[in-house]
Image (cartoon, rainbow, N blue to C red; front, side, top):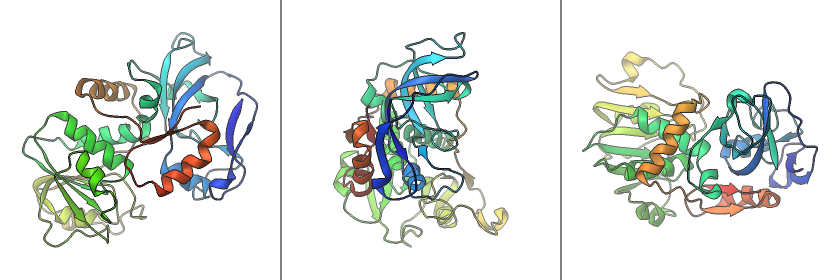
Length: 319
C-alpha cells in the first residue's frame, strides 16, 4: 500500500510518500481502509522530534475516518462499516493514518451513523471531538458572555462554530495575536475580537466573562481566572502557550471565590460521545467543511500549508 513515513525527525521534507507492506490483521485488531484524516499540530510536533516517546521510523496520523476492511471481531464490526478513530497511541506507539490502510486496536474503532461525505467527515474527529467536550463542560446558558482565547486555532474555530450553530443566545469574544484573520472570524459570526500580542495576558480593560475557553493553557490559566465573572467557568484544554503544567498552583488562592476551573482530555474517547458529536453536527447543521484538501501524495504540502495558512478551518487529506 501507499503510505507517508517519517524515518527521522525534521521538517516537512522528512515526510516520505512510499510503498510499505499492508498491515496484517491479528487478534484484538481491525484494519481500516483510510478515506480521510485531518492534519494536526501534534503530528507536526512529532515529526519535528518533540514527542520523546515516539520511535522512528513511524507512519504518523492520530485520527482517521474510513471503513472496516478486515477485523478480528466480526461480532462487533462489519466489513464496509463507516468508522472513526482518534488518539490513543495511534501514530505514536504504532503506525497511524497517513496511509491507505491503518491497523487499530478494536477498542479504538468507533462505528458512526452519518450522512456526511468523506471530506466533511475527515475534518471532524480530533478537532471537533475536543471542541465538543469543551462545549459540554461549559454548561452554556442564554445570555452568557463567552471568551475564546486563541480563537483562530483549529479547536477555537470548531468551538466557535458549535456555539454559533447551537441556537443559544451568546455573546462571543475571541483573542488573536494579530488582525490577519479578523475577516475570517467575523464571517463565522464572532461578536468582538481582542488583539493580544502577548497571548498569555488579556488587556486590563478586557472585563469579565461568564465562560472562558482557554486554548493557551497553563501559561494563561491564572490570567483567565482573573477575568472570570462570579460563578463563571474556565475550561483550560489547549497548551498553545508552551507550558504543560501549573507549578505551585494553590486552588484556594489561585481560583477566585465562586469560579470554576475545568478541562477536557480528548484522549479519553467514548463511543457514545463520538456519536453524540455527529448527531449534534447533523441536528444543528454545523459547517464542518474543510478549508483545504490534499491527496496522500501531497501530505508534505499539507504540513507546509498548515504552517502558513491565512484562513481558518481544517486541513484534510483524502487518499
